[in-house]
Length: 141
Image (cartoon, rainbow, N blue to C red):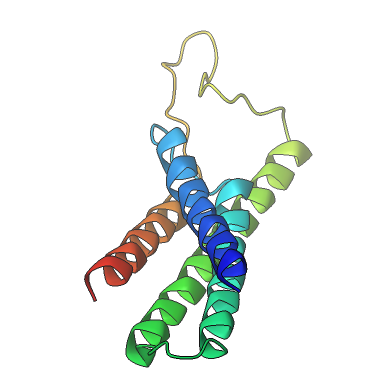
């Protein structure tokens, strides 16, 4: 049972690293990438499995308030990442329907380069922020 718990903790932390790493990898043009969405799902599932394993372990006292707060935060992270991924997917489909879109923001010969704006930037910030708050709750509560 201890090996299972350690494996779940490792995978849970890996999901957090995927979320945080994806955010920092796209910091210049923030957007929700598929890694953030998959990391959020991984966090949610492994967190629930960890609580299940701890409930079946004898002699372990669980702080249910902390688990409840972390569950709400994990659901928020997953929802923010899901909405951001949907916005990115819709933007790519819309850009593919019209003229070919350039990823470097270049608008033509005479116009200065326009900044690349991703529709999921706000969701990327919210996903990252909620994930950091979840880490703070896990460490300090």
